[in-house]
Length: 519
Image 1 (cartoon, one colour):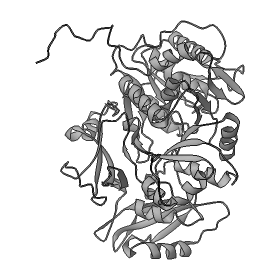
Image 2 (tube, helix red, strand yellow):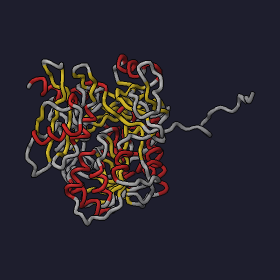
Image 3 (cartoon, helix red, strand yellow):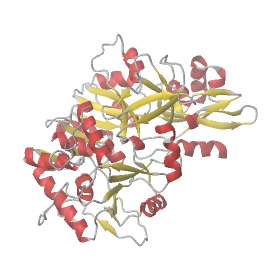
Image 4 (tube, helix red, strand yellow):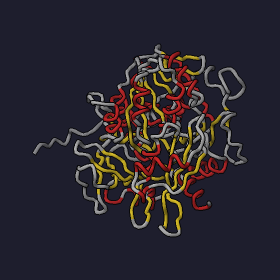
């Protein structure tokens, strides 16, 4: 048996994995390359390193140190990116907060996280009368408020406070699609590995220009905050998710990569001129892209990659990028991209199992639950041991998402377990109905939930958000559904209006369920 007791890890050959080392390397290798673009400003990576050091020095002066939680509520601006390095460089834990949450929701997170302070700007200040200090950033370089773009640069050892790779780096709260959010703890190891997986999956290089349409507060921007930095690419920060602004920025900055929710893609397709020609790789997750969306964006140069993941998996857990597959038609490509793919490069295993925990057959038909295992699964839910143990039962992470496994190994989600509608004893997938409802040209987004029914117990209710210029027509939608769906799957009620969403574009179905129950 191979054995040699002196072959043990030591500082010479073992350093804790941390994404902070990616910035340290980039500062050595690419200090003069453009690193951050925001509004009319561009900073080199050397400049960005100074912003990080100033922020870390200021936090240290506020008494922040190892184990402290620092909450940051900002849009996609340079200081938000800097916080992903400055806070953990002190051994502290970064808690990024959704900018669209209400004051009460923010207060809950601050209290549950035990935050020492909150960093925001005038547009994201929740206006809380709380005991914790709230510090406002300047609206732009040189304006009144905290300004980390100029001034003395204190020394900073980016990785010096990382004692173990399993220590927490960030605390992210779930998006609130199902109710009260839970605090999800990421480690330096998981963040480092997921970021490297993203570099490979997205093809990031020093020539990449990544547009921040995905909020950095969402799963730390799927770990792209660290991934783009590792590659030495350009972070193009965007103040607002506006289709016109996005398209203008893509053209002005030569954007090569971006990530966003499906709703943003539909907005871009509505706004993009037919003669637009770009070369942008787009990662999206959620509702599968339709043939019309693929064709419309594809002819303009947008190459879509379909992801699946959760806050608990650091963002991407599976990836569907058919870059080497030739499809006979756009419909065939859309059918393939409707699948959420196979495990992400940094993930351990992604399986579909039955209620007994056994793998379902790879027949594309048998329904099971997606379970995950690997280095990019959360450490656990903060201050919620019961929820952690329940999520990790059986030695895997239970996603609660129902899917099938295709013969080629691709996973395809069919529904959330809580979104299955049981009508007259029959199980109905809300996702199946939504896929049908997205086909009519006037429908921008559709969400289906269970509504009460005195005879059947519950029946499908469809909530519809229309494109501009289209009038509500329940009869037309009902006729279309009759031609595409079995009778018991057809929505019994159509409700028109703007759909409630999280800041990342996810539809808050629990709000719609409440509306259905109250109607």
